[in-house]
Image 1 (cartoon, rainbow, N blue to C red):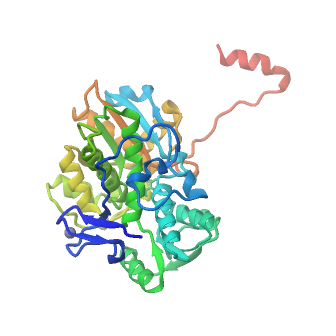
Image 2: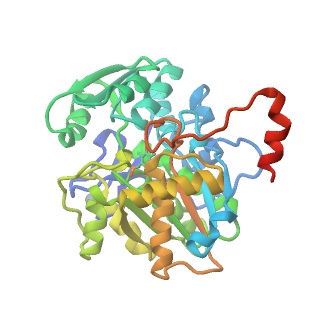
Image 3: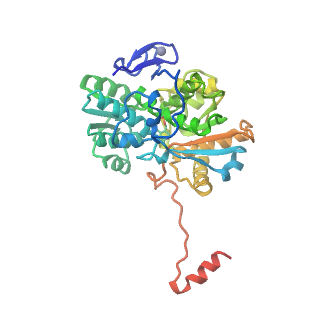
Length: 396
Ligand SMILES: *Cc1c(COP(=O)(O)O)cnc(C)c1O
Ligand SMILES: [Zn+2]
């Protein structure tokens, strides 16, 4: 299968066989021809409704169930950010995060190309997602994790029976090593920002845009780590502009946890390239990438759309996570709550307008991290005979 790639930075072109990165150092993305594209109307609710903009064919199995997540209006959060709040709830994906979008496309294309094995470098959601999609497609899956991964997280990945290797050494280098070894040994590595993953993850934005069509939201606020999802969202709006389906591209805002915020720090310094950081502990562990492979592309996306990159403290993240649960009914992973925490900062700065529509991307479900910020539950115990009176007390 011929899949065309381009480099956003220098314009170089390539194909999938050339590998995921340009000689200039920046990541390639999949190039499509959006010229004749139009919204698909009724039919497939999964991400494959955008098949004309995706590599590969609509598969069967789990991959056919990725995407199609709800966009939830959250009026009780409007006051927090001084704008109309909508939440794109990616917990609605088969394994509970947007990673399923990238895994669906990556694993389907690998299967169609005759690969017997796929792989990824991840200690969390992406590993779980790849293992699940490989299980459904009948492919082997190699998951490379850091040697010191907590047992609770390893257990969730192991449910789908991939081959897990704990790798000692510098975790940041594993990305390139895996790609190199994968090419020699015919394992299709679908890492955080590799082109097929980014192509699939572009569909988060296609769905958001279609929900608002023919208008577009004014701003999208989302967490960022490697920058793979961010790159996809930016690409989607570039394609929709080219197809004449959006007049204005939303301002794209990307949020990091302050303890590990290399992209936000580069943005604050006004730089166009990201410098790796040491990186500390944060409740938003899913977005703690100290050396983000697509960091420079994230800066470009923020710059070109008039958005920005910001960092929020753990206390603000946990507070936002509670607000999403208690006032939008959405229980999200801490990493995703950075979107609301970030939007609150934007509101304080006056960057969001009262008549604007803001989409917070809640990238994953909270059900995979029960131990973070678990509240002490206070509930009265009553004999059944007293139930009537107890309910009466509650209602005042
Ligand atoms: C992977 C992940 C992110 C970050 O996405 P990148 O593409 O690495 O920037 C954000 N939230 C959740 C829940 C994730 O699993
Ligand atoms: Zn390039």
